Image 1: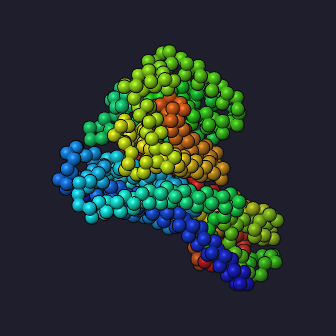
Image 2 (image 1 turned 45 degrees about the horizontal axis):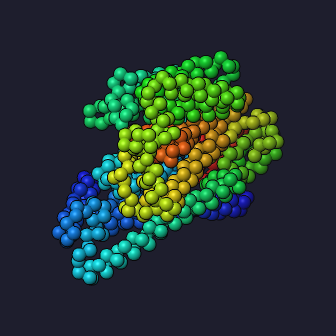
Image 3 (image 1 turned 90 degrees about the vertical axis):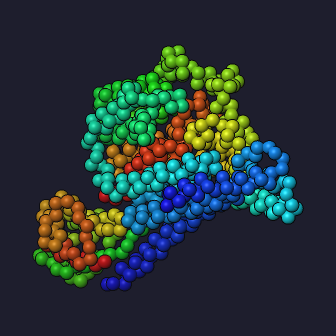
Length: 415
Length: 192
């Protein structure tokens, strides 16, 4: 009677150790990449603090994986592994550009990991928070209206709130609340009438964002809502309709707002104003082209020629120093991360979990598309951050919050 | 820790920068990130050799870095590929439930051990993992599932209820080694 149980026991142990060893190997590669990159920086700048910094990163990565693996082994651990890889690449580049900024970013990264853990530990079953739809709506709209009155102007768009000791971007936080709001509305969608209020909410927030000159976030909001409405209703007509509205709104704002016009004109021909409005995109294109296929090598590029190099245009310096190959690697990593997000959506059981994970994956995907597309002049350049890589506290924390929610959803397949 | 990092990071480049500036005979203002290597140019030959060695090491490390990034991506893709093919097996600790008592008409022998799967359905219907042919057992009576290495017992709205250690269950609860379950008169003990 006991023998069959014992055989199953042995198989399970083997199965467990195999996937665990695989994960360990992958993590060890991340450690090696971090260490080598910081060694290069240290050798160039004779700054051995870089190695210490790298070791600290490795310890942080190891510890967070250890905790997740020990207490929450059912979740999708590759979400964390991939985001740690991206954050490490970001920290390497920021350290190479400006070490002091990297130390600040390390604080945000540690804080982000901490919040990620807290969400995984403390958040109740994800389906149980589906009922607060008006709370989500109110918070999202409040955050967007707040900037209208208290916003301060940093880097050309009025989307920052200065708290004195620190400043943050409410629109970053509004993204997650819009996702939760749409998921809670769409999870028991029956009739077309239910789409009227969310439609108005999205429209209002888009108008607010365009007025705050935060065009990149507006595109992301649009992408999130189209994807979620399509998944929630499985009706392609809504996608066509919103595309049409987007074109009308886009053309309308092109004529109505001068800042939209400037962005589009600089996209069509940056050389019409190379020293002012076109400067960013021209410098970015030069940096990418000087990198070539294999890159100039870490520490051999010219980040001082690229404006906003540690935040919006960090992809240009990655392409310059690690080459086209490095840039591809970053894009592939994002692709894998988003794939893991959609996989979570496929395996999730409740409609609310499904929609939330679709929204979060789309958010990361849209953000990567908008900023990389802008940097390589595929679409007009708008100032948003690259998830996990760019310098920025709000963006780092909000990305880890959404990752924590994804992790939480990925944990609850069977329940 | 952070404070130590800050001081190290602050002092590191400055100290070395000054040393280079002394040896730099070209008089040009060296770029902070290039000073490390170009500044050696007017120095003794052995320093130049060291410098060349340095460059070689960094040059090699550059390609090691890129190739490691791609090995990393290859490994991750491989794992995800096998995950797609294998349908995402999850890790499971082994446990079972042993029949310790039967009240009423039932053909199940006392002492039988049922292994627990990630999801184990218990009931009278044929599609359950553990089929109990007793009149007091509902079609789909209870479910034991695995979450974060813990088995959780959930009553599937059965007629006669599921009892854990003598208490009728209202919501899903974690079961441990030695717990006693009563499912429609059939008593099980959890073995972990």
